Amino acid sequence: MRSALVIAITAELTACRDPRVEANMAQAMIEAGTQITSLQQDYAALQAQVDSLRIVVARQDTVITRLASLAGLPTSPR
View 1 (cartoon, rainbow, N blue to C red):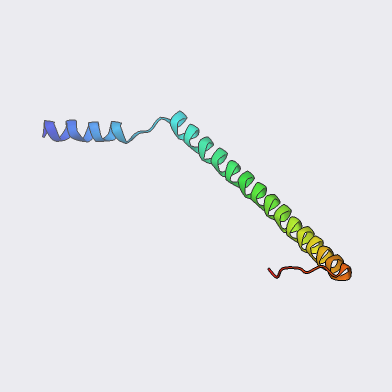
View 2 (view 1 turned 90 degrees about the horizontal axis):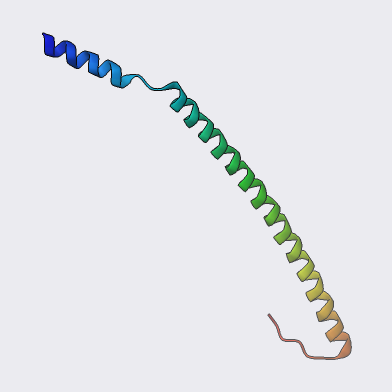
């Protein structure tokens, strides 16, 4: 009976967690979420820049092709 009581008390004490540890873990999770959101925003901005650069390159390619055509220069197909 006494050993069962000791085991029960030991289990009870180990089940209790330090509130500071819990608060630190919660804060770390919030900060991780904030960082992930920031990375997603950065990725979206980079994707917009890449899309913009693709449009610029396509326009320049068209202009170069037209100029070469008007000058009578052969162009290689892509």
